[in-house]
Amino acid sequence: MQIKADLHVHTTYSKDSLITPKDLVHYAKKCGLNAVAVTDHNQLEGAFKIAKETDFLIIPGMEVSSSDGHIVALNVKELIPRGLNATETVKRIHKAGGIAIACHPYASFKGSLKENICETFDAIEIINARAFPFKKSVKKATQTALRFGLSQVAGTDAHYGPQIGYGYTIIEATEPSVEAITKAILEGHCQPFGQPVPFTLNFMQEFKRLERMVKKNQ
Ligand SMILES: [Zn+2]
Ligand SMILES: [Zn+2]
Image 1 (cartoon, rainbow, N blue to C red):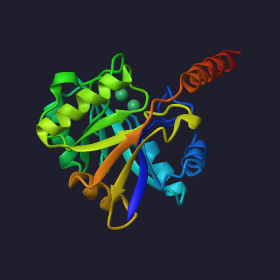
Image 2 (tube, protein in one colour):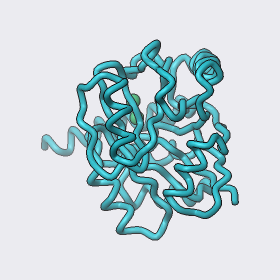
Image 3 (tube, protein in one colour):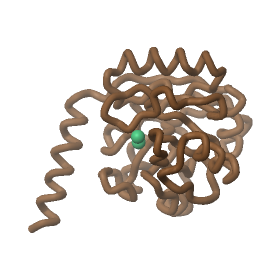
Image 4 (cartoon, helix red, strand yellow):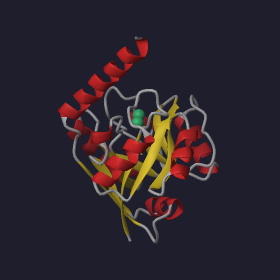
C-alpha cells in the first residue's frame, strides 16, 4: 500500500516550533497525509507522547545535532546524544533500531552535513521544503544519493502548522505501521515529492514566533 508521509516536522517540543500536537494532526490530515514523522531537535520524548495520544500514524524520531551537521533519526528506541561526529551518530542510530537520514544536506543556514555524508546513512532528504537555495539543494542531494546508492526521501522541516505537507515521501509499505514504513525506506521503496514552502508561510511563522515571545514577556 502507498503511504504519503511528511518525514520532517517539528512540534512545540522543539523550542523553535509553533506546531502543537493538535495542529500536527489537523494539518497532516488536511493535506491528505497518512503519516507524519515527529523530528524534534535532540529529543524524543515528545514524539512518543504524541504517538500515544493520537490514532493518526506518527513515526517517532528526532533531529540530532551531530558535530558534522543535522541528522534525522526515525524509529529510534532511545535518545541519540548530540555532538558526536556523523559516523558515530549513524552507528548509534542503527544500534537504537532506527534509520539515519542526511537531512537538508546542502541547504545554507541550517547546520547541514555537506561533504560529511557517507555510505552508512540509510537515506538522503532530497527535498527539504524549506531548504535554500531550493533547486541547487535538490540537485546536489540527488547526485549524492545516486553516488552512494541511498534511498531518497522528502520532508518539510515544518515549524508552523500550515507548512506541513509541502515536502512528502510516497512509501510503498506492506502495512501502515512504523516498522513497515522504515523497512520500506531502507529498501528504497520510496520517492520524494514537494515544492518550496511559500515565502508568506515562512514570514507568518516568524511573525507568530515574535508574537509568542512578546506575550511571554508581558
Ligand atoms: Zn536541521
Ligand atoms: Zn529540522
